[in-house]
Structure formats: structure tokens, C-alpha cells
Amino acid sequence: GQNIDQPTEMTATEGAIVQINCTYQTSGFNGLFWYQQHAGEAPTFLSYNVLDGLEEKGRFSSFLSRSKGYSYLLLKELQMKDSASYLCAVRDSNYQLIWGAGTKLIIKP
Amino acid sequence: IAGITQAPTSQILAAGRRMTLRCTQDMRHNAMYWYRQDLGLGLRLIHYSNTAGTTGKGEVPDGYSVSRANTDDFPLTLASAVPSQTSVYFCASSPTGSTGELFFGEGSRLTVL
Picture 1 (tube, rainbow over the protein chains, first blue to last red):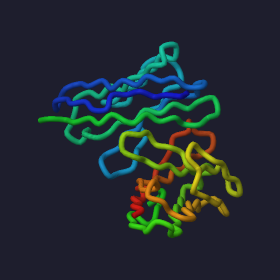
Picture 2 (cartoon, one colour):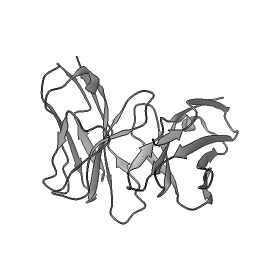
Picture 3 (cartoon, each protein chain N blue to C red):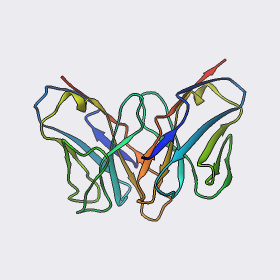
């Protein structure tokens, strides 16, 4: 079966750095996405990786290793507004998105 | 403001009733999707449409139907609601030729009693 694993919850301190991991086992691979979802709101797109390596976008970076079935989202200079759930999703060989259950990130002052 | 509009935002429904969740987008995206989101689970695809006039089944289609008469509208119908359909429903769209980034509506919270 297809599976996306990410930690259920993480806690970090304002101003610090946090890394949210995502491992996947899917039927084929056509890209990995990270989305941010604030409580009670819709998910919003953060990043897309299809090749191995690091994609940097401001305070957020996303890394992919296809051989290891692994990705991480790195958030730097954490702000209180970064408190949200972070969803990892992989597009499989049928171009269908398989979603992880999300990681709830709690930022403490 | 361009985007996706869903209605209603919240609804309590008696089991056995018929319900249609509406979804309208003004971004002229070809592909549209309906997901449900339940606590502790990832988003699950109910139905999708790659272009107007076509629809397909997702991971959890039973008990739901969709139509795509035009580019902008993609309603989701529950023919006879059951309590297990209590969930938050998100409509999403994506443009053709993009990386596949999804644009989501604000969600419809449905409670079936």
C-alpha cells in the first residue's frame, strides 16, 4: 500500500529552527508537496520538489531524497504565526496525490 | 478576489437527507477536486474532474456524486447522508501545465446526525 509518515506533533521556540520530516512509500513518484494549514482554514501551498536537493524559499526550505523516500521542511526564524499543521503529499505514478496526516507545529514564546 | 468559493461553510444534517455542497472557482482552472479531511487522517480524494464534462472517482467515492457542467462549478452531492460522512470537505482546483499546486476553498464543515 501507499503510505506517507510524518510526526503527529512538534513543539519549537519562537526564533528557533525546526525540521519536519516526511517519509513515503508510494507507487511511483512524480513530485512531493508541502502545504501549510492553520486551524480551521484551508491548506495553502508552500513548496514542490521533484528532483533531489534543497529548495529554498525565504524562511522555508524543503529537501528531497528520492532514493531514501524522504523529505523535510525546514522553518527558520520561527514566528508565532508559523503555528499550524504542515501537510506532506506525494504524487504517485497515476498523478494522484497521497497525503500524510499532517504535523501540528506548536510555537512557544 | 479570485479564488474558490464553497457553500455552505457549515451545515448540520439529519441522516438520510440529501445535501449538495457547492464549489465555484473563477481562476479558469481545468482540474477540480473534492477532498474530505478527518482528524488523524490525511486528505482523502472523493471525486475529481480533469476538465469540464468529465469526472472520475477518487479514493473514497461511495455515497457521493459530482457533476462538471462547466469550468467554474463542481458541486458534490450526498444522496442520502450517513453519520460517517461527518467531516470537513474541501474543494480544490489546479491549472493545467502547472506543477500541480492545488488551490483550496475555505471548506464546508458537515455534521450528519
